[in-house]
Structure formats: C-alpha cells, structure tokens
Image 1: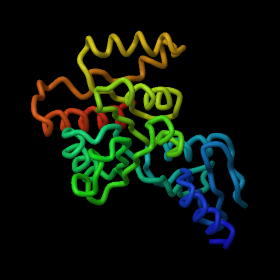
Image 2: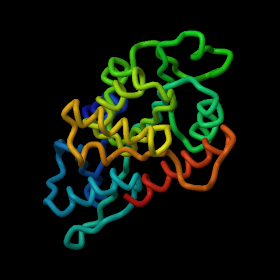
Image 3: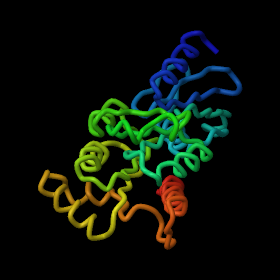
Length: 230
C-alpha cells in the first residue's frame, strides 16, 4: 500500500469519514472510494464505485468482479454512534445495550446533576445545550439520536438538528398525545411533514414495555430494525 493511501485512510479514520479501499487483486493497484469522491491509482467505472458505496452503506467488505478483473472492497466505516439526549433512568440500560451492540454512546444533558460519571461510567458526557451539542457532534448516517427528557425545552432543540441531519434513526420518548403537541411545535417552527415523519414516536417497538430496562430493549430493537431494513 502506498504511503499516501495509508495517510488518507488514517485521516478518514480521524475525521470519522466512511471510506472503502478498492484493490485490484492482480495488479495491486488501489483506490479509495468515499461517499462523495474517489482517489487513487485504480481506474474504477461507475458500477464499481456504486458497489463500493453500497458496501459502505451495508458495512460489508467483499470481493467483486469488474469485467473479469478481481477486486476486493474493504470497508472502513467509523463506529456507529448513539446520541442520547437526557440522562434519565431509561438511558442507563440503553447505554449498556448500545455499547454491547457496538455503538459509541454520547449522553447530552445540560443538567449536570443527571449526567454524572457515577451514573454513566465510560460514556462521553456533554453538558452543552442539545442543539449545540448535536451540531458539534456532526450527526451523520452512522448515528442514531434518541431524546428521552420528555421536556420540550431540551428535546425540541435536539430534534431541530437531528431532523435536518443524516441520522439514520431519530426517536423521541412520549405518548401519542405528547407527540401530537411536538408535531404542532415543529410545524410552527417550519419543519416539513416529511422531516417530522422521520421521528419514531412513541419511541421503541410496541412490546408493552413498562420498566426502564424494557423500554430500553424496545428502543434498541427498533434502532436495530431501522439500521438493518431501511
């Protein structure tokens, strides 16, 4: 592998930028395929570039053939992330489930008494206001956003950013009545029906969950369902 290819891979990893390394198994030539660019010595047609980007989307490396030429697509995706707004009781079991499922977790809650190291050991904590925190985190299509505070002053600013981001999942805690009021507020703020329709609310699969742990299970199950089927 050429030094500049290695450096570009390292730079992509540092920037949490998805990239696929496409290698010609006969010649050893290589190119990097990003979601918005291609760079390298290996000439790739549009069909192969599309396959490389599909591999990024599916998070799956593998061999492909280009008119009889064997190529290998190796995916280098940043870790999946879950941004949880609200350091509430449900967040604690949800953190455990998310980490077990391979997510990097960030807890956002400006109420310092809630987002503590004792309650959330080993988790990135942010006490910034939710909209500022999400803008700083640069929400991408590897990110799930879950709002749990049940407080419009905190949940709504997070949704304002999440709904116009590339987040693959946006979920919000609250009853159907609560969500109805949320829809009214977002509509008044200028969000379209399609944008508001991205919200999974009430959050989680309908499994009659009652306890914080059961609700966390329903949320994790729904996030997994969206990740694997949409």
